[in-house]
Structure formats: structure tokens, C-alpha cells
Image (cartoon, rainbow, N blue to C red; front, side):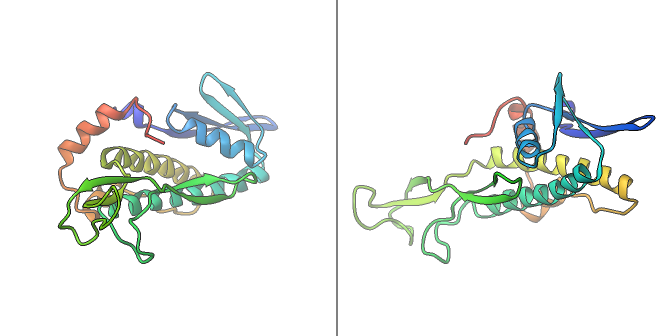
Length: 207
């Protein structure tokens, strides 16, 4: 499990006048990283799962931007988990799962999933009062186990980026801690979640 969740780390290879950054990426995060590189106009090579990019000022800047994007992905995961039972928001509808999508230039936007999870509970204050779904309550279509797995994956990726940039820039970048997020979210059944991670480590989250 630990090996599977070691998402991403860097090695700087210096060879006289040439240096490169090697990204070791597992199948879970690889599509996102490749998409970011392509849309950010970063040239890279892929050899047996290792993505290599040239170390230069342009690529360094894009990697700095990537860590901010990764922090936003963590934030969205936390919001999704926090609102997993939210049946009414300020706009009067159930909370909609949010996902970060990359734009064509490597910047990002936020996408909302309009799909709901219906639970029959006619006594609920937000139960539908008319139509074929009368008595049902619309909950966000969020799977807790999958969202926790994604959160842990995103945190590991962020921490790898933070560690790399801290060494490169000589500054301290705060690393995130999954256990702290679990505590904040009042998710205390750690043994259950560890078992979930083990079950999901080779699976892909639902789209």
C-alpha cells in the first residue's frame, strides 16, 4: 500500500551542462500530470512511467504553479467530504461535488457534478414534495471511501512537490498532513479507512 501511494517524487540529474527533472508517477496521478505538462507547453519524455522534463526557468515556474493547483485539488476534496450530507446550500439545491479541470493553457477551472443520490425519507425537511420522486431527498453523489483515497493521494503528491521546491528554492513550504484532515473532519474510524485504502489502491475513482 505504501509503495502504491508513493505517488510522485523528483530526482535532479546533473550532467555537465544538462540537467533534468525525473517524475516517477503511478497510474493514478499520471494522466493529470501528463495533461498539465501538455497544456502548459512543457516538453517531456515518458519512459516506463518516468516523465522527464528539462530543468529551466520556464519549467520551474510551471512546477511552482502546479503546487498551487494541487493545493486547490486538496481543498476541493475536503469541501466534498465536509458536504457529503448537505441537502441544501445557499442556492436552494443539494451540494454538488466539485472537481478541478485543467484549461487549455494549463490554468484551472472548477466543474460541478449535478448528479444526486436519492434517499427515500419523506420526513426530511428537504424531501421532494411533488413528482415521481416525491418523498426522496437529493444528497450529493459523493462516495466517502473514494473521496478519502483521492484526498490522501493528492496530499502525497502535494508534499512531494513541496519537498522538491523547498530544496530548490531554499525556502520552507508547509507540508499537508492527511491525519490532521481526518481529525478536522471528525472521521475517527482510521482502521476502516486504512482497509478502504488497501481495497482501492489499484482502482480508479468514479467519474
